[in-house]
Length: 465
Image (cartoon, rainbow, N blue to C red):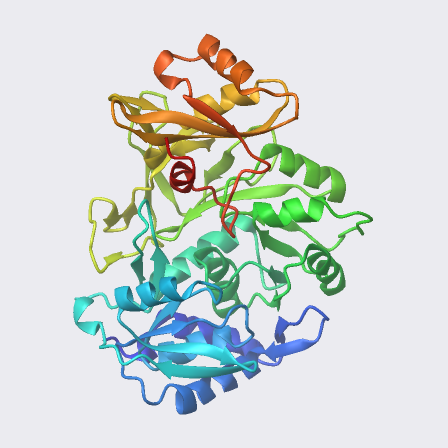
């Protein structure tokens, strides 16, 4: 295991500490929760008191939500030679146990009465599995399956992701990040935690996601950068009597596709464009919509600074791209998948098409529906359904079929006058026979998870044939 004194993140932090008296973390009422010097003192205390019984190479889960102790706890783990597993505080007990088992977690940092505590799990260290590239952080990802696995990151890769984000989005220490997204997620970790440690970008910590509270805090703190998710922007758009946000400079959306109509509605209401940010736990940032012209559904912009994209299919249709950058993780754990992730390259499951100098996401490889050997892209079906009068949202998915492997089904949000027969008739006129849905289900809203992501697999389970 590399000595903590040689760690690149700790070296970057030493540079940041030149501003130790400056405010680093604010509360939503503008009060200063931590200066940079406070974070350093807290990290030293954690090393001395909380982590003294942990052995170098062990995995420690950090499950404290958006707590102001997050940066200090990360630094303390780095100094102690421990491997950090960020976990969202709200995950279920089953998900937590699966993550502990997958990563061999020896201890977990939790919050009790707003104080950070360490709970031992009596699991063995996983250090023997790291070969010559021991990680400092493991990021959980489920990929295309429901089984969790971790992505291994060294400090150099985390710094590379931070630099790509700050350079592409033009974020500097003169900015003030607003931390409403979970800092334990890859998006929050890379846009909030590492910029604070590596580049001294301060942040506001928010634990209240109620729309009015978010808006009031953005106004009061004069935050300049808001990394959000589509569900946040939708909730803000639904508020009445909204104040102006003159200090806000950059609005970012990631975690789920940003609907074009939502982006337009937000710009109309608040006067700010939303910049789509496309990334992955395995490699950090991939693309960013720098201009945010908001003219094309699914557009995610050009490759990030220092990121190279290799087209895997040059026919001009939807294709996967291989991502190459210094931010790509070393591989999956515990089961490696070198064809997908490794040697500085990652192959996402998303299907992209070129759009000018950038890219538009049109679906995922795992979303393709196998109808008697023919591959059906659900995006084509959804586009036709959205052309029907009264249809406001649509999602197509594949259901099990005894005779055809899968059959196409769809859910739509529509006005009261819409009828399944009329929608199916439209599809029969515009789509090939194997693309036409067998059933169309009417729902009040397209179901998504807490990050605003859609699960076609969950819909297939809910609407079994």
